[in-house]
Amino acid sequence: MVEHKDHPNNLVPKVRFTVAFSVLGSCAKPVQRSLPQLRFPRWLLLELNKDGYVDLVLQYKLLGLGFNLSSTEGCITGMLTDGTLIEGCDSVRMVPPS
Picture 1 (tube, helix red, strand yellow):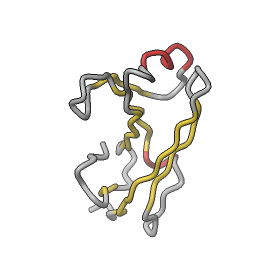
Picture 2: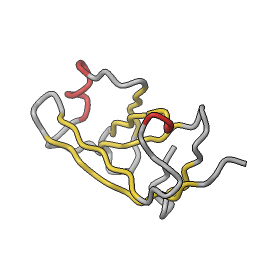
Picture 3: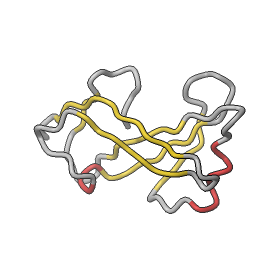
């Protein structure tokens, strides 16, 4: 799972390695409203940033996302079921598997 405190985030391209993207909730945009139509492999509701609002964590298998050993950034774009656009990027460092 990508930890927000790590810069860049270390990613190891292994078959079982997953990468997580988070959508931070707020009083204006509770993430629970987007859940009924999510079709992602795995998602969790967690309180990530200690602001009192539930956040949505989407987990994907790393090998299907198009990263290679020279990748330096990971981005996600999408739309919540209420029409809200989401997008974000973060730095990554690909670490060859041992």
